Image 1 (cartoon, helix red, strand yellow):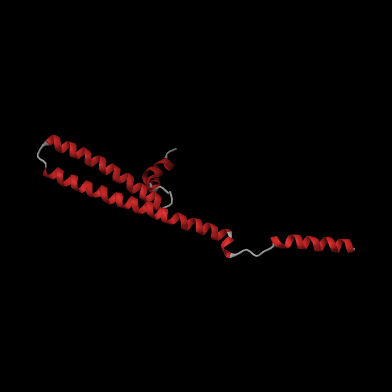
Image 2 (cartoon, one colour):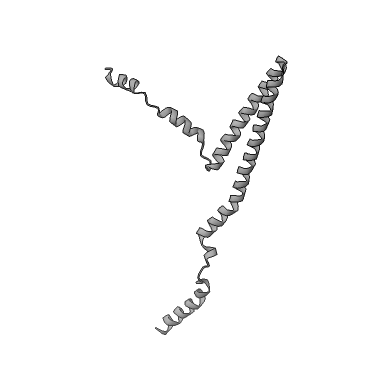
Amino acid sequence: MFFRGLVLIILCILLTPNLYAQSADASPENKTETAQSAKSPSHEKQLRTLLDTIKQVESEDAQLSRELKRTKDPANAQQISQQIDLIEKRLQDLKTSFGELATGGFSISALDRRAEEAQFNWQKELEAVVQP
């Protein structure tokens, strides 16, 4: 009996240094919040950079459109028109990237495709049901 008590006391003495209360900073919830707050400036910086790039590309597009209206040479007008097409494609890609980054990687174009697929044509459905 004495031996059990002695072993129990020794175990308590050996294990108590490991039984400290954890501070609020050490909790897993706070660690994830800290990690998210560390990522937030980077995320915000990426959004800001994309937004600045979009504005710059829009101004380039407007400048080329004005130049296209002023030009008289058909060959030059065609070249400017091709540049405008490329810039508009780039602008669309930038806007898509901005939307995906802002929504956490969810593709907005997927919503558009789902909306197109979800359109219901009652006449076709009725014909499909009525036909034998």
